[in-house]
Image (cartoon, rainbow, N blue to C red; front, side):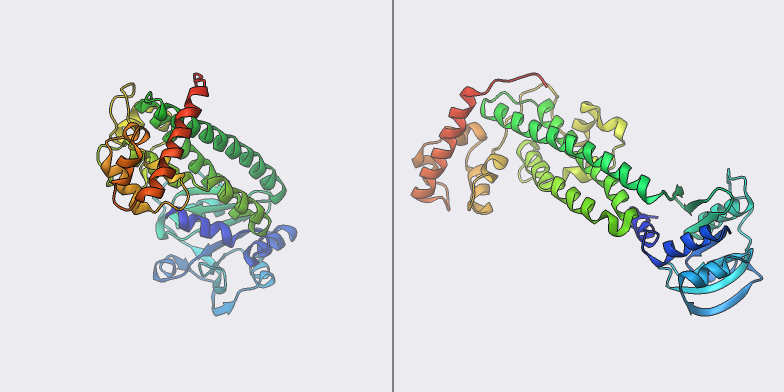
Length: 352
């Protein structure tokens, strides 16, 4: 099951959705339930007894009434149709499960065998568990969930500030020709962490349903520009230009969190040079800050000069020679580069 499929399940179970309303009804009537989300020949093969509903329309009250019987209820994946009720499920008993209760053991084995999510409502504990091929997930109380989501959102905001600081520091080092691959890796590590925490917070927002809309907006705002910045930084320091890899964060997404904190591993994943060796930027990210400068012209400037230092110290005539620049734009570029050089004289480097 993919991450997207996992999120789809959480959306189906979010507060305000019919399936969640049905679960709340089942909890209030102090009964349990085993609900299979998905129907087909594979599910039918492990069904025994019960009765068919011939694709009856789903409603919270109907599901709650059917749950009063001991057997499982089988719906479609979107919980819009009910196919069977009071079913005895017979999954392969050799499938490993650590669950103690009969309903939970059956749900876990069924989910693993047929690849369909199984929801267990426990009347004794008043809890709701979702079993998928990826494992078990406990649904949380919306009030508790919102508090946890806000806490993680604060963590995301802190990580985003650290990324902004790392980018400012890298710009300073690039202009002063003092950047190393360690500085480059630090920025990409922080960008990857921002993306990872954002995905975590997004899961909370999805599970909250409509109550998570504001969190969705905040996450999107905090992610704004992160992928582009990471891509431009990689383009500036990759061995070849343009690099074959346009999204370094997609590579780092497959690295576990422990290894992501190791600069050497990240550098190896992205094929950078030794961490403490001098890393000269091509200047593509610096050029990206200029408004109304076409990407084709930016690429021409990067192709014409060896690195950012060549750009920063190019004369108006040198810049004018580049295709697509022109005299007026060459003067604007020269003014911009002069301001960068002047600003660097007032910067004071601090150890990170």
